[in-house]
Length: 255
Image (cartoon, rainbow, N blue to C red; front, side, top):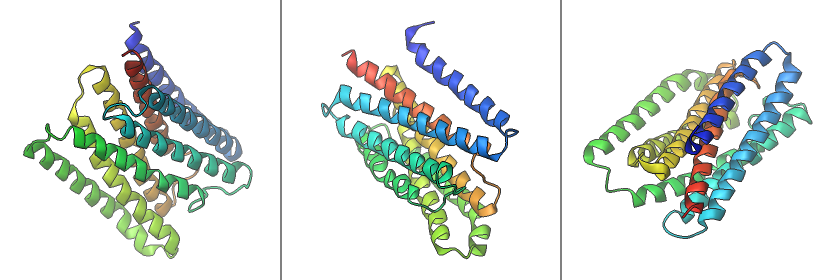
């Protein structure tokens, strides 16, 4: 197997393994599912943050991508802290589905460096964005906003918890921003090793944003529980982000 494909192969194998694990775990009982999935999230998100740190170390602050990598690393690191906080709530404090909680402070804080890093990236690659491409992005954003509003409006009006309602509105709004930015990143370029690395990062951010919208809908409708297969969107997102970071660290390290 070509060396350049090994990372993609490993990510694919892990994605399939996580999927099989999640569906098999549905018959284990609540406690084993809760503990195993929480630990899995901490390990996967922590590994993703480590790969982001390696990319920052290889690139440093040289050139135009230095701050972009730093922003993305800080975002993933904050999300790792959120996953760790969520796991502590569930495993040690026995609070199932700790939402809203202090873990959300880290989750929400991660949006700022992610958005800043992505916008700086897009500033450097603004030339390819023709009016037609911008129209596609704009329409994608409108469709996402419309679909989210239709899905969340009815359960939001029935919710009496102001904090939860605020979170359930705030997350989709921020996620739509990430989705639009991720689509623009994916459209910027996808050729060459560096381009493919950015594409994986864009896909990872997109999957995490879609997972957040599904989570908000699931908690409002009452069908979400810790260990639900919907969480695979997050795990696939972390795998995609980690693959992008790893490819960038390798590409820049070889220069």
